[in-house]
Length: 416
Image (cartoon, rainbow, N blue to C red; front, side, top):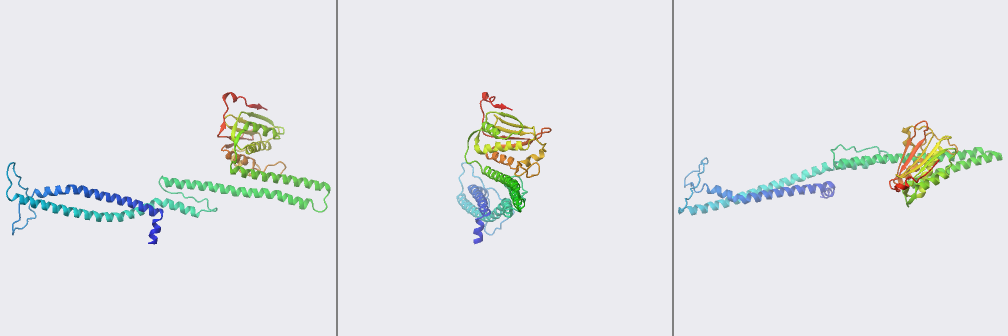
C-alpha cells in the first residue's frame, strides 16, 4: 500500500491518474450516451416489430413452433371498420410483450455496458501508466545525466534522440548549458593556474635576489642595485594584484551608474597616457553613456596602455568616439594573425611569451576591458590590422548611448 501511495506522488503517478481519469470519463460518457440514445427509441422499435406479427398467427395447444417460418404481418383495420372482440385483448398482449422485451433489452444493454466500462477502466489505467512513462522518459534521461555530472565529466551530453518537441528542446538547452559550464570551469581553472604562476614568478625573483644578491658582504652599489630590483618586482606584483581585483570587480557587475561623458573621459585618459614618440590621431564626437565612471576610465586606460605598449617606434595611436555609441582605439605594431585575436581577449594571454622585463604587461589589459564592457552591456570587438601597419583595432559599442542632434555631430574634437 505504501508503494502505491509513493508511486501516486510521482509525476508518472499524477499523469497516470490524470490520463486514466480522462479516458474513464470519456468511456463513461460514451456508454451513457449510447444507453440514452438506444433507450429512447428502443420501445418504439420493439413495439413496431411486435405489432407487425401479432396476432397474425397463434400457437394452439399441441402445435409445434416452426422456427423457420417467416412471420406474417398483422391485419390492418380498414377505415370505419370496428375491431373484433379479440383485437383489444391482442393489443394488451402486444403492449405487455413490448414492455417486457424493452426492459429486458435495456437491462442487458446496461449490464454489458458496465462490464465493458470496467474492462475499459483497467485498460485505460494501464495505457495511462505506459503513456506517462513514454512521455517522461526524456526527463528521466536528463535527471540521470544531471546526477552523474561533476567537475570531472562536464563533457558528457544528453544528446536526446527524439522528435522535435518541448522535451527535445529542453534536452538541447541543457546540453548547451553544459557546454557553457564546461567552458566557464575550464576558463576558471586556467585563470587560477595562470594567476598562481604569475604571482609565483615575482616571489621567486625576490627570493633569489635576497638570497643570492645579498649573500655575504655585498657592496653598497650591489645593495642599491638589488634594492632597485626588489622594488621593481614589488611594483609588478602590486600591479598584477590590482589588475586581478579590478577584473573581479568588473565581473561582479555595476553597483552604481550615472551619465558619463565618454568623449571627455577618453580625452582626459589620452592626456594622462605616456604617448612616447607616437603620432596620435583622435576624433572625439559627443558621446554620453550610462555606467560607472571609474570602471569606464579603467576601460579606456587599459586600451590606451595596451595600444602604447605593443606599438612600434614612430608608430600611430588612434582614439575615436562616434555618435553611434562606439569607442575605438587602434595602434600600429607587429602583424597579428587574425586567428590569434580571440585568444588575446583571454586573461594572461599575450602575443608572445612573457620575458619578465620592465614595463611588460601581464596579459590582463584586454580581458579587463572586455569584462568592463560586458558589465555595461556593451560589446567589445577586436580585429587585426593588415600589413604593413599591423597592430590591433579594438572597438566598444554601447547599446544605450545618448545620440546628439544632427548639428552637434560635427562638433566633435579633432586633433593629431
